[in-house]
Image (cartoon, rainbow, N blue to C red; front, side):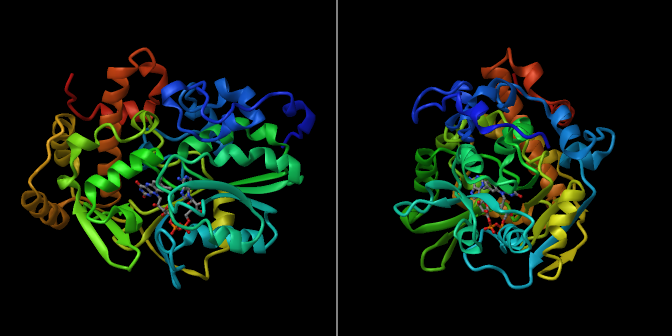
Length: 399
Ligand SMILES: Cc1cc2nc3c(=O)[nH]c(=O)nc-3n(C[C@H](O)[C@H](O)[C@H](O)COP(=O)(O)OP(=O)(O)OC[C@H]3O[C@@H](n4cnc5c(N)ncnc54)[C@H](O)[C@@H]3O)c2cc1C
């Protein structure tokens, strides 16, 4: 990787907190503009300059094969599987595969630092990005901070600390900007561990989401949109509350998601070396996508700590997706009894495994395509990647 001198970057000035960002309202607060790497933002920002094909080729040696139905949906990959930790990490989002891989990489000396995100002392959901140098610091970053998080804001620290081998953990928009400036970082080796991501919110938006969906918003420690078509909220006392997707107050929640997330087509984190999510796996399991040899090397380190099983696909999502498009668009909310009943039925006969992942991708891509078409028509052609256009073209959209 090309080495770039520190002083060369130092000349550029990061933006002050709260100032208007180059991507304006589409800014996903990835953190790039909080650093002197802001000088590359017009090239690098996922919402100013979409360039999946080029960055996939740079990251994986080729772009995705659009004629391969799995790559069309899940991006370039070598291997996919369902997995879970034999001994889950308490307090992790799922079983803690992400934290485990990061700790192993540090302990084996593959990297000197890990970019991840802890929370502030005052607020469990307020993101606080760090470069972790110890396993304890990585562990303290476990669990999702379900808000836009400026993970890249710590990039300048790489220079200051003189790090040459780094792991970055992040969601799609952060990783797109990171890949675009990767060569400017002067690293000997960069590893990228990604999670899928969708429907993210600002901290204020998160509060609205919790307040409208939950009986005790202040005690929620963790939540996830699960494969059983329910949102599972975990409270401080260990109790769990579930709300069916179809019972969410769509009319109140429509504006809660960040405009960047409503315009995003990188649900599956296409540019990471290794992706760990859940949506292509059976309930209770995590979903792993190994995109290239670097990702394989990273997963290898955890092989004795995880159980795996092959991915599977069951059901047919198409009708459910088509029906959900106008329902979401018109903000239809079912009465709770009907939502619960529908949740039970769809859980029994609905899409499972990879077909559930396709259901979720189709629902979000059609919604987001409509959003960009209605709000940013001039950007539509260049911003929506070819794979997303093909996915959306399977459905009839309202005007
Ligand atoms: C905002 C968000 C939305 C997600 N949506 C989906 C989805 O729709 N479908 C799906 O399959 N998977 C999704 N995931 C991934 C999934 O929820 C789990 O994070 C993943 O399976 C890893 O679980 P784990 O137990 O191995 O992680 P843990 O070991 O608990 O580690 C979690 C890691 O996530 C990082 N992190 C936490 N919050 C953020 C953030 N806001 N931005 C960047 N990094 C963060 C932390 O640094 C930590 O290292 C999402 C993740 C996030 C952060």
